[in-house]
Length: 184
Image (cartoon, rainbow, N blue to C red; front, side, top):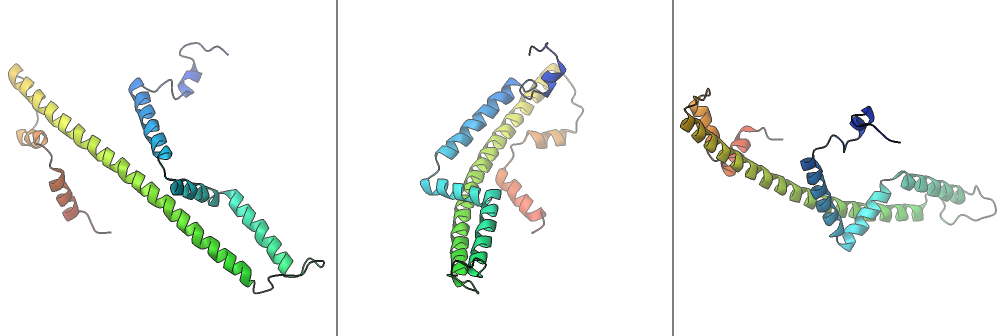
């Protein structure tokens, strides 16, 4: 199908209305995410796979079928087979307990990896934000100098402008946040 430029269907294509800079950023993020997935240890990969399966509908369905079959077998519903784990189903209880222990371990492994990855992203965000703040401070200083040189009167309070032009101290800002934000 050939579409005319400016066709309404173009507006529905997210790549059509996405800037080249945004596309480049998305590709960079995708490369970082793929590298993080590739660099996982064997244990992390196994933990992620098990956690992904344990969180699926197939896992629930498998357990429904398994428990139903186990209970029917061991309550004597099948007359031609002898129950091997009669009520109170001690063997089933042991198996389910072991499964719960191992599932909890694998979920924790996956959560720890995701937390490490999230921390790395947060550190990257902080670095980018600090660089952006430094760049904006420098641009404000340059703009102030240009305005003064050109004789342009700035219509903001000079103390407000001075506070924005000053370098931000992240440690002082964190202390201020801790002092003023409520405890959870």
